[in-house]
Length: 204
Figure (cartoon, one colour):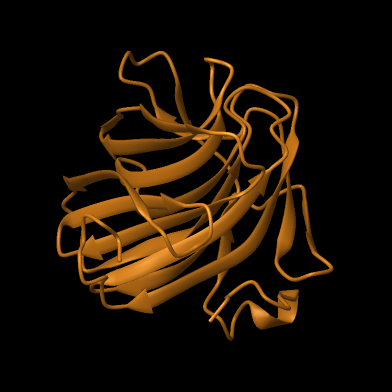
């Protein structure tokens, strides 16, 4: 089920959705999904140097228990460096992971992953030149696998790692603008299903 298809404020409760750090605005897209308007300098990042600690970007989430596969289809506007559409799995400010389609500081757009255990790491993945991207996060116990796809079917692994979290976590989409003056991110699809792909590393 696409949780953001025909989304209205009245349907949030029925779909168990909630905003953390609500956006400046969000609107339905004509073909389905939503466009999120992001304020300036909105991000989730606990800089390993200690220079930046921010936990402020709009995050549309629902509680999910047990093993799952979450997917999002994102199209960021890429107005400034680090602007991105994101799929996030989160326990609290100290424990979370996100997969971003991001405008990097190397002048590319790429699949970027960040894993936070108190402090965040930051790992650029494959450089991509498409306007929109599918993102996938799979949880198997304390193991998380992150993947991207151009078509929502042919998945490519970004990384697989261990992240200890309680049985129920927040899973959702983030629109971020870490250093810019604000941006928009289109989300065409967001879904969460119980169970896992046959091959966790391959994502399918």
